[in-house]
Length: 112
Image 1: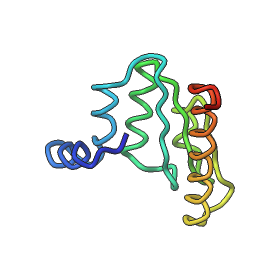
Image 2: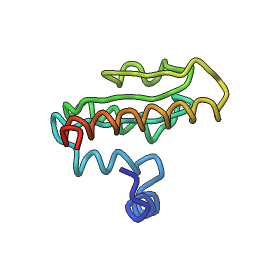
Image 3: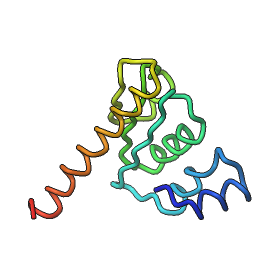
């Protein structure tokens, strides 16, 4: 969850690398799902949040580009775009996000 107030406060009081891990610490529960998105696959703030999520028994899904080495061990499901072109990777990530939201809404609200 990217809440600009929380992001700013955590980055200011702790570090930008802690902006997501602090929220996983506070709100993450077993059976929750964390989706970590990193075009490069090397974003420290995303990797730290995914690592803690695994420790707390959350399900983890990762979206990345071609570099999967850092995210692979932290993700139950890792989706990678076979490209090094940042705009193309981000466009595919947006598409995947829309698909996941559509499928989730269909399951939760029975297609209503």
